[in-house]
Image (cartoon, rainbow, N blue to C red):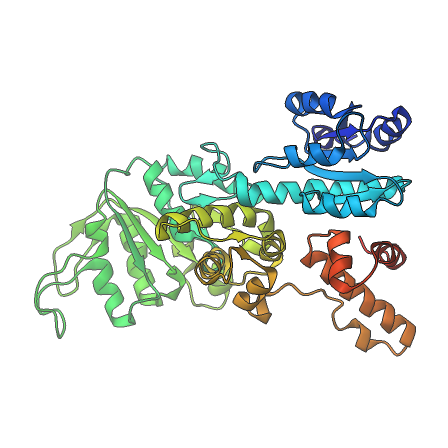
Length: 459
């Protein structure tokens, strides 16, 4: 029995005891189920239990389920509602969907179908809350300075970084471009004992090779052509503070040797000078390359690696923590509203799902840029999945590994099965796994689509 699942609350609202009992038995091993026999009793249970999903029968004594649905489907934290209707009342089901129901079931229904629809409703509510409602996080819970993430690898990263920040150890931050290595470095400085001193960054990849040493160690007047005056380098500027060497692997071996000497002795000399200058600097470095591989290929000094990497912090790429995407999108959306001083459009759930499923080769940086494009260029008050696809481009849109499969088989029946599976899987994804909306979009009857899903084994 999953204790986390049992923390989820399902409310069954039906005036028939047998129907309530059947639904209770369907979920008693998965969720905590509470019951109500009328709309009035349901209101009390909603206020007391705060259910995440309500299984709501339309035919209730006194008030109809549709009246209650319109009342409770307000507010960002509202539960998802699955409307239950009697056979022959499909018109009411359509009205329920228009009023905000997640889906509907017609009696008598299969209990396995009920479980599946309920699980999808919970997933949809989680996504809706993450994107549209849960924008404030408790301090220290999934937040490290300007970085956000509630996934397991990010929580572990934040916990380790929080401990390391209090020390003077040299830190190497590893991770792909766009993951936020600079933000992590800044927060390590801000939380450390040198926070009142300077944080001095240097992007080693952005400077021509002949200027790197001058930027690091400074130069005296006349040290080289164009050196019209004395210049203090980054090591001097960062004295008693933190020096952040971004993309450290892009430095040549000669410069690496000088950094090693400075890191070990705290002694530097300006180019063209003879005076030794003592500095007290905490070093934080970062690289998007595998430094062990760079060492093996003779491009990076092993002794410098050991000096810089007293502690190594790895920031996982966004594709390995896709569950953090809704949180990041919500945060960026709020920032854009403040930046542009307008409410802006809302994200459709299909658009939000597509953002979460995309590959993000540019990681958080690419996600942030994409979100701003969607916010600024939205053609209506609601961003669609098509707009996300157009903004991302084909290379970043999630594709099923079976997309080419129909063409790789010589059997017509198998090719047809593969095509139908791929087509329906994509359409269900576009419509948030909602069978009713998917059926309407592709021109099938809802029951026919359900039969196809079952026959093809689509989950």
